[in-house]
Length: 89
Image (cartoon, rainbow, N blue to C red; front, side):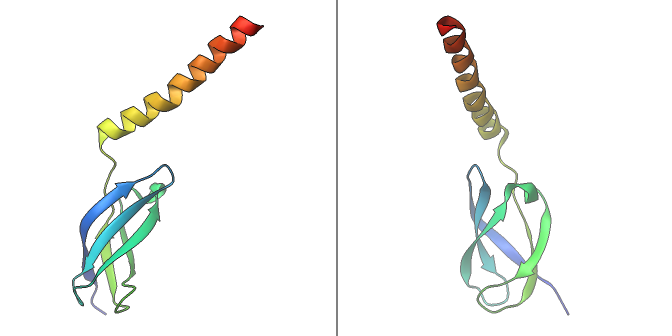
């Protein structure tokens, strides 16, 4: 059985997953699919939800700038919470 390719049209990262819009090379239909962040940067195999053909897709990486911004957002509230706790103690 020959594998096809799913072409990445767009992607959106959330805190929990990656939502991608892809085009099936066999039926030319556009569909969206969600993947866990653990699959970021990997090539995975799955079936087209429209024509049921098997294919592969490259799941994108989150840009470094976005990762740094999320890490900063997560660190800042923790530090603020520690300072408030120290002052009230």
